[in-house]
Length: 443
Image (cartoon, rainbow, N blue to C red):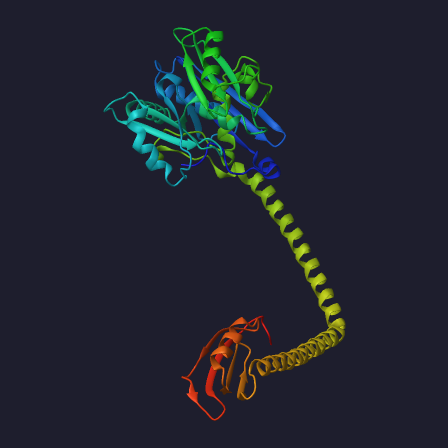
């Protein structure tokens, strides 16, 4: 699994990876169209083309030798080709799975697989890929017997195949080699002249369908209108031909096989994305790695250059850190002196606040003593007075001890006054012990 296009988005890196040679084969009616693409950062070039007539009627070994001679003539015998199957032999479905990760996608798609094809109990082969970075997945399905037939036929011919795919998947990958397609969507049509009856194949992209591929048995204008409605395209969205959305090939005439050209382009740069592949993994052949040597050399040079820039940045950072540390060491005595003065100042402020607190506490205690003296009328006496920040406790004798409790309650300085012991009789009156809370936040 993976994405139809690679995760490499940096333009500079993509330019370096646009380097390779690929072979694409398209089945078009009773003949095979073969294209050999040579891709470079500056553009794509048609390295060779071949048409194999009546491949079904001729012995596979015969036209296989013709294909092998073609590759040898272009020093491309090491290549494994991508084969584009007839569009009517592949079912293409579009699934939107928001929030489904690449790890969970296989199970989610397998759960819906039976509802995606009309083959019933027939054995099938399928592959799926995420369309770019969207939440949409493209699923390609074909009957097992069809895949086995083409795999056996091309193996008999001696043709190495990297994969079997359909035209829309190859176009999706190759159309992005040099620049992205229009963001708002587009529609491209081509007439399948090799079909027994004129058919129109539509390829399109839109926010609703990141990859749309279908064949219509209708005139081109009608087919385009139906496809545009399915794609939900705006009225002014581009409508063009397949050749206009693929990279131009130097020396390629107008009358070409866009499906074979798209497959060759995708085969040339697999590191930038690969089409859906219906060929069983055990039958897939790989192209020689020698074609990637120039790209590897350029990539290595880029890595070395990036490493040199990083080393220079690290050296500059170390030198700057050393300069900062030297300046900090020079200013350290002054900073220590400032810290010492700050500590001494803080201690002085604390002492001043403590003295003010004691001064206010003494004044408050005298005010309480004065008020209590006025409350206890002669011959009453106050024998003991204890003042804390929260309460006062007093002990004495008075003829009017009950009234003293009421006076304390009405005073703004006290609250919750109560006797802490029963009244007893003394020489100058009732002996009382009273406790009250202090009010007003007095010190």
